[in-house]
Length: 68
Image 1: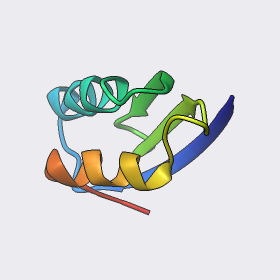
Image 2: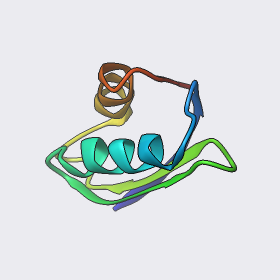
Image 3: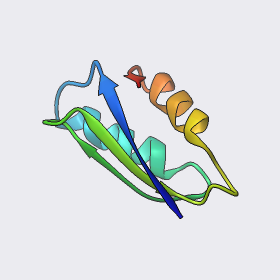
C-alpha cells in the first residue's frame, strides 16, 4: 500500500469533503480516503497495482475541484 496527499482547490463546505471521500473511495484499489476541509487536502491510501494518482485527480476533477 502507498499513501499520497493531494492539495484540493475550490472545496467549500462539509458536503464537498464528504462528496470527495465517496468519489475517491469508489475507485478500485483505494483502501482509505480522508479529506480535510480545513487543510484543503485529500490523503489516499491505495494499492499501486490497481490504481494511481492520475485516477484520483480525474475523480476530483469530475467532482468539480482541482488537485495538485
